[in-house]
Structure formats: structure tokens, C-alpha cells
Length: 283
Image 1: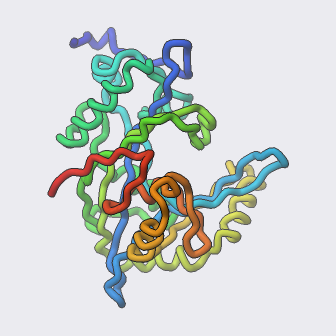
Image 2: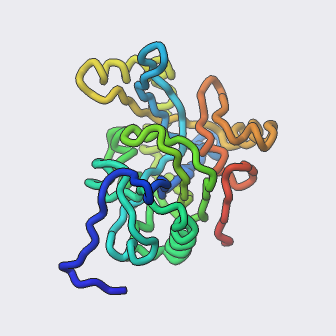
């Protein structure tokens, strides 16, 4: 159904009795490069230190996860035509037009099918179809560089769905039960300078360093965040996950004294994770 411009849909904000299911649609990016000396395949992760409030006061959680972030909605009216009425989950998502929404639970399957079609066709008329915007923002945050398109290549790999709701850790909507859809990409870093920066960031900071930097950020009036990069050999990651039971892969795990988020297992082609449904594209 086409609408006149004067009838353009303006979504509300927050959950309602009917719009009770939170859905997050985002990119997950498998950032890879070949070690310049050994040729080993290296996975780069975003290492995030976040100040949280616990039962006994504040603490800083440090975890490493794939790069990526919320997909932008480019045409809110067209999305409503496809999935029905929706609200953004908070003011931040509304301002950024991020696909972090409250929908009717009955619309979940329509959202999932719509995203699969969009990802397969790489059609960006309604929602964002590529990883470049979020990747550029995250490399600016972690490495303080303006990542250029000539420094890497990327390709769409498939879709990952987490259909069983679980509480979100998103700062602006923490705790809401959420279902998730990820557009998975593989990025290959080609620029030796960017590789060097990632190795430097990985070796420069311990997790304790990041905790202290996040606390300093909070004391200076910030949110209590600090980001860096973690680089690990793909062989070590795959071997560790293969040694775990499928059920254990549903949860964060520790590797070389670093906590890896559960989504790390999700981006590995040869690793089965029960809570994630992977639909990989064939080359």
C-alpha cells in the first residue's frame, strides 16, 4: 500500500500492551586478516569495557564480541506496510532510526522473512544492507582512525536468528526480552597499517586496563565505556569452541583470559550453537 507524503508513518517510542516484543536487527562482522609474518588467519573482535550497576554497586564488565551494530531503517513507512505498526524501543533508536523495535508478537515471522529477503537481495530501499557505516564508527571508536573502503573488502555471508527472547544488554533498553536477527558479513583487512593498529591495541591493553579506563570515563562525566580491539588466531578459537558441548556454546566463554561473547561462536561457519539458527549463503 502506497501512502501520500502527508500520511507518512511516524512511529512511537516504547512498549505497549500490543507492541510487546522487542526485536533487534543488526550486523555481525567477521573481521579477518592474515598475520603478516606467519600467514595465520587472525580474527579481530571489539573489546568493550562497560560500567554496570550490580547488586553491590558498580562494576565494569569487559567482553569481546564481533564488530557490528544496529541496522538503520531507511523508509519507516515502507517497513510498516510490511510488518505492521511498531514503536522504537527508546529515544536513541528513534533519533538514529535503528532497527530496535517493539512489534506485535504475531508480526515476528513477517519481520524474519522480510529481513531474509532484504539480506539475500542486498536491497537497501527499506533498511540498510551493508556493514560500512557501523564498521567505520566502531573502528573510529576502537582505533581512532577513519577506515577507508580501499583498506578492506567485504561480502554478505548469511543470516543468524535468535528466536528465543533473552534480556538485552543494550544501554538504552537494558533488560527487555529481545529476539534478534543478524546480517552476517565477512570483512578482510588488506591494509598492513590497519593490521598493525589492531595488533597494537590488542597487546597494549589488559582487560584490567580497560576497566580502569572505563571508570575514568565515568568519573569524567561519560557513560563509563572504553573500547579496544582483541586479535586471536582463528585456529585457537575454533579448537576451543569445538572442545565445548553445543549447549556450552550458548554462553560466553573464556579464551586466553578474555571473555568472549556468545555471538563469537555464532559467526564461525563450522560451529553449531543451539540458540542461533544460521542460514548461510552459498558461494
